[in-house]
Image (tube, rainbow, N blue to C red; front, side):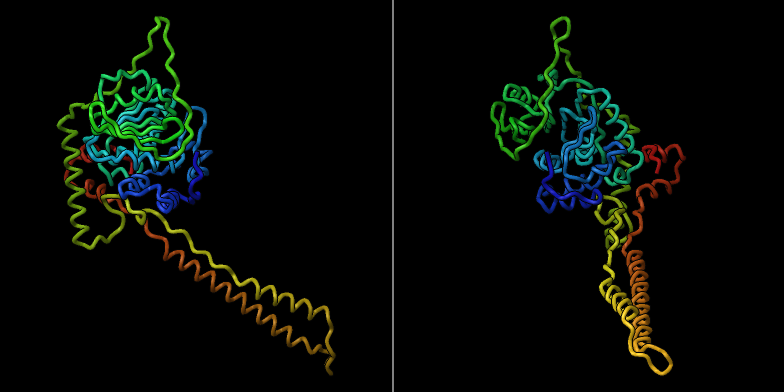
Length: 387
């Protein structure tokens, strides 16, 4: 499923294409997509396909097409502080984008059938937290994943504000999915080959909206154990009691971000990089503009020289061809064309140098490192990030 938009050269161009095709329609969703490079969730040997609007599967690892994730993110109508359950959480790509919107006081849970995929998801999550500057531009709700079949969750255990299922659902499991939802909550799922948004408007009332036609692999049905009972999937705690140290870190980082934002506002929003939602003009480098060389004039000059050499002209008194001066003139013209090309190439290099923006500076990190605090405490405030 996919192929609705053109491939991009990088993550930003892919998002540009999704916006142009109206798959991404809100600024909050756009910022989340730009903050996380889709290629980081691909195996290294498949990264060249990351910016195509296509689904990807390798063994148990799977990513839906970007246009599908765009529609899902828009339909979920995410807000800070909400609780989210991802059924079939896979690589964690969607859960991580959701966590950028939920903020530090949201709930972000995922259930995945395959243990090796959860291991891969935690590796990708750790890579994002430790290496991506986008982590410092958002207040993040870190996802938690558990192994199990999403059809073996005890429905009465808890309910969520937002639920997404990443596998095809048939009618017999629709009510099971609905029971995972709070009143006022939103469920997005592929229901009988249609991506569907279901809003719980009351205890027994629902609103249903079909979004687009999709094709998903169906839910895997639970297997009964030897005693005839299925295994119940234990979900993570809905609200864990935060330590005072953790709450202090959240408050300090929030205050510093707010201060930096105010300073940048007074300064007219200039400077490199910064805090807040990621700008597409931040660390991104603009692509080099390529000028077409004037090859037609060069080819014509070469052709003229060739003809002059093959067809002898009238001889003068000094046994020189009358065309010799013309040939030299042509050679001079060709040399001038070559010089023009060299000047054009130099101009291109100058322009490409001017077009390249400088890498973004992580101002929050610099501000924390400048605080008069012990180094271990600074690293704690930085979540022990490597850069």
